[in-house]
Length: 447
Image 1 (cartoon, one colour):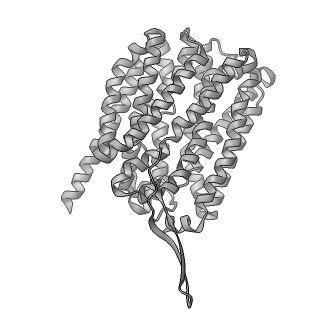
Image 2: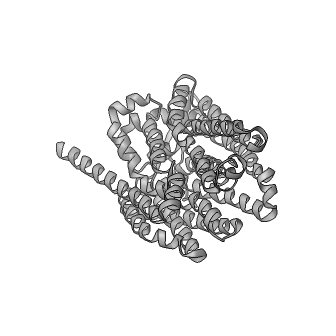
Image 3: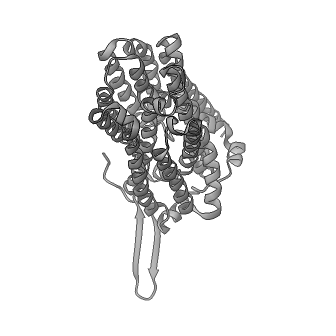
């Protein structure tokens, strides 16, 4: 899944005078990529554990007071979105922590908060025991999960992009994106096992808590794996040399505000598709289909492997077409898929399975290059903060409310709204890429 690492740029050299001995350590893109993959896989596993539970478990455990199962699921998805609302605030808070106390303190505090909230959800009594307090506590934990996810930005993807060989940037950019399907596969596999092995009553009573305990343990392992990279003298020096340091978001917006918007909107085709093939279909199947939950999760796991293959393929494609053209071509592909999505979802088991498999394949191809494709617009000084904040905004406007909006509209007005949602994301990406191209041509003409 990774290319042979190529050493680039000596980051520390110590000369022993009088004896002529010299030692040095070189930052290799492959080494950075390992840290990126480990970090993203742990984050996405935690992310999907909550997402799957919000579709299958939480409507019964925390919202049994709703008049219908549909209403309970919509309430669950509203709480699900809180993390994405909180995430930009988490980025701003933890950038301040990093400026004051350093990168290691920031990352430790963020992942400790994330683990605490995840474990808190695992121990949280349901509505049947403590009433509305359970909903309040779930919302608080979910909000602070978002704060922690905003703070978990370590800058390694930006460092990887700057140190990757020039003609292999698409390949190295996609490596960190493998964490999303990897995290989904493990999370979906755990829930599939629970649903296949336990009676539904036991899943809803205690079985669902085990994936949250696993997420806590994985966060601890990931924390040490990432700290091993980001707090070493060599990496700290390299990030300092390339000005990958936190700035105030207000300063970023004053200097590069339009580029934050362009970077966020350029990823919308992929981010809109992200929840439409992962979280939303689970709720739709549970409410309106005869498919069993474990069977459908297995199909989604197969889709996750297709997404991993698509992400790897996107690296090869982007190194030949450029990342921006790849994003544009895949946005067109997602727009085309949006026309077939409603028909497939309404065509029974076979159609739903085809929707999942094709959707995951498209997701892999587009998501592989969606993050950071336009980060060069920020320049060295603003790249670290710009990459983090624009990604937060992309998740907020592209994915946060996707399960809630898609399920609500489709349940009341028909499946055509799934296609409309995907189409809107594709058009937003194409528009952002078009504006970016126009601004680039304008800058070149002014030289």
